[in-house]
Length: 192
Image (cartoon, rainbow, N blue to C red; front, side, top):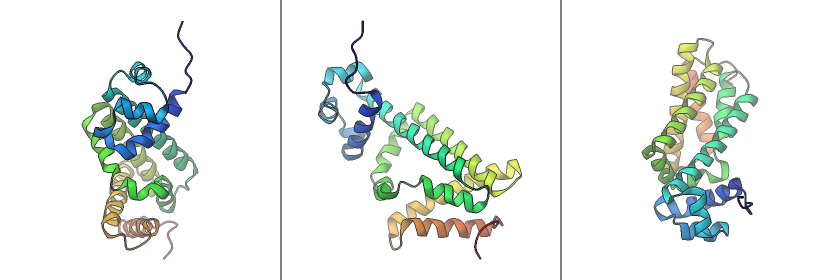
């Protein structure tokens, strides 16, 4: 008969994700993880198998969170270019934005190196592009293309904001996306 877990997997993964953001994947050890979650290293080995398995589980948990946030934004956003912009602004990490566009790139590196995590990122991107595209045009093929373009514009705007940091990030990204919508003729609902 198995033992009851004193801390749920979700609570462990939440704590480990916070730790991973400060230690980076290369610095995360079972000893550090054990201190952060107040479980023995042996218990963590039982749950995750290897250090790499633990990192993958943490990052899959982060993808689960992003999937949920994206689905919630998709369900709430108006079906218009303005809704597409609103949706992307909802997905931005708010008070963690500076971390996300600097140290968060170390986590992204892990997502790109690991085939399972890379597949999750690809699936999220496809979902996001579809949700954006539906708000930009009624033409399915054009919508998919425009959705990917808008997602790329959004990410580019965040990266360039991280270099400049001369305006509020949300306002800067919103302006870039509105300008892009105007340039591709997706102006329904945009202010002049």
